[in-house]
Structure formats: structure tokens, C-alpha cells
Image 1: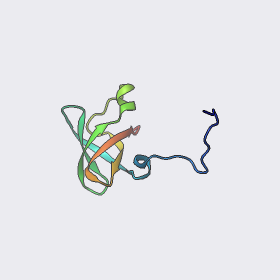
Image 2 (image 1 turned 60 degrees about the vertical axis):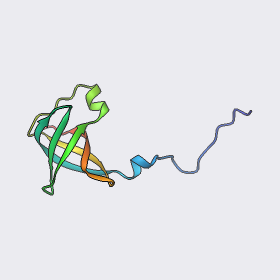
Image 3 (image 1 turned 90 degrees about the vertical axis):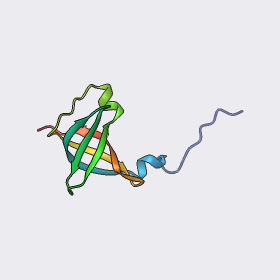
Image 4 (image 1 turned 120 degrees about the vertical axis):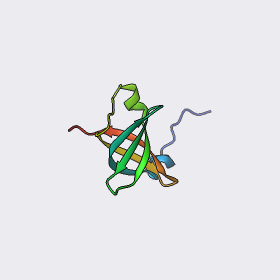
Length: 87
């Protein structure tokens, strides 16, 4: 076995980072199990959950907060809250 490192000509990206839709919205309501109803800028209301990093750093979200969300094209009714904007 050789200890040579494999080099790639282009940076490696997994499928989940390529196919993500980033949107902004306003939190309407807090639901159980760290879920939130979020109204997007286009008027749609979706369910959002807190990302692991936000949960790890105890970032609290309350109704009225502006947030950034990531959504997959496979399920446009749910999203992951990745950032709480400062007011």
C-alpha cells in the first residue's frame, strides 16, 4: 500500500451542498420540537427547523425574527434555518 494522497482537479462537493435553495423569511410561530412556521418573502409559509450549529451555540429564535433558510428542491414545504439576522 502506498501513502500517496489522491488529488482531484476540482474541489469536492457533495450533492447536498450543490442542490440547495437559499431564501429569507420571517418567523411567524414557534412549534414544538424546535420547529417554526416561517413566511418567505414570496408569501409562502413553510416549516423550518434549526440547524445543528445554531442549536449547538444556543441561538434562540422568536416570532418576528428575520432568518435565512436552506431548502432542497425535493421538498419545498420544509427548510433548515441557518442564520438569524440582527435587527
